[in-house]
Length: 66
Image (cartoon, rainbow, N blue to C red; front, side):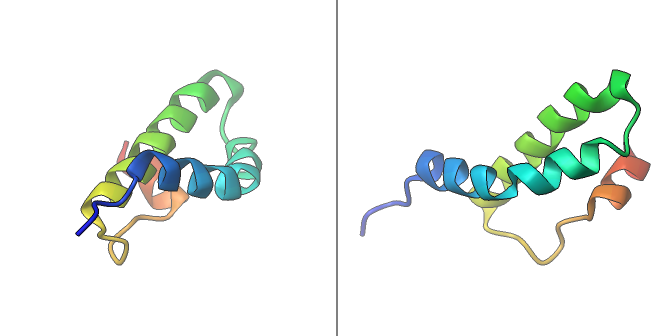
């Protein structure tokens, strides 16, 4: 059985979520945007690897916990 190509999958999902992430980042102070963007990208990749999507926090839940 061939393992999934996580990098390709990540790039496709990241591309499809790019506009949503950008829109949500504008609700964050400019000084924190780049850090939050990197954290969101890391979370997306981790979720892809583990395959656990049911318990993925929303952007506001995530921001409150950080």
